[in-house]
Image 1 (cartoon, rainbow, N blue to C red):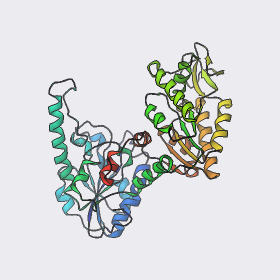
Image 2: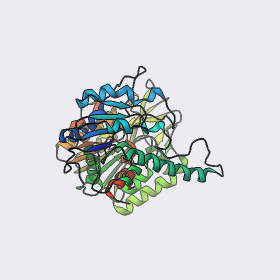
Image 3: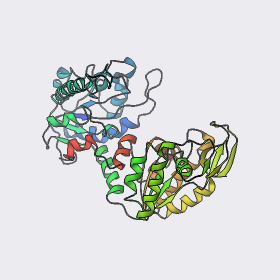
Image 4: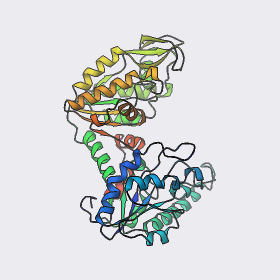
Length: 417
């Protein structure tokens, strides 16, 4: 069942949304992006004449009630965006009365799912090394199913529209789907867009296909690199993770961030790329700082010749010129991760330039998918979010999908394994 084809008239619909929005010290929402992202799905239900029950997590309360992470703080924001007076259930696991009282066109928000450890399904108060851990794990899985069944009992239909948690097999993202038949569960509009965007680059890419993978550590992106080697024509590796590749090849990287234990894997990626005819572009020269600070002295060095006392902080103009040519000649572009210390204004130029190149290539007809916190922040900072094909809302979920992993939140709906 697709959400577009479904008629929600007279139905109660429980929707997993991602309302894990940032709050200030007074509990006021500072960014409504995630609330706005869920509106097409929620409004479809209400406009059809259904009633909607929204459920979400916020933060990491670790299975305990924490007033600072209560979703009661965002009720007014959700009401204003949705255009209806949203009701609130202060206990997500005991909200049957509130759910039963809902009339067509009405909306209810449940309290933070993660106030219950059953949501994440992990044993609490016991270490993995404890001999009783496996037994506790099994008991928690039973409790998780019971919790999911309770949530399911509130509604006739289930919609998952929280891509940011699609890589987690939580009660509300995957287990709950077991209690709805195939015609009573579906992906929301946001989830459909995310899944389609990833399919566009992993399954339906036009060539040349270029992946730009940045960030600080090879360890967090190794699975991504291995999966992409089979799919891309060009692989641009930037950011801190690039220095592990240079050191693995015998280069001098000064005090730059690197992972010695990942050097064999880095060499393996390079070897595999050669075997498969994939062009790998590392940073030929680097803007280095004499300390890890926005105010550090700057100097440009060839990336394999960074002296001691200096550390790579951003991509150089020479590197960016090469990368620009590759990006602008591409038909499909995937970008995940910054190519410099983006949180420091003085070392954010490289990442900003990449954002501009991706936007320019998109205007020239390429399909571009951007995901990952700093990549998204870069396109937003320069007002380019609407100049790329798609900006993913789920960093971790997108990474796992690019690695080729099945996302439990999607598989629970589509029946994939």
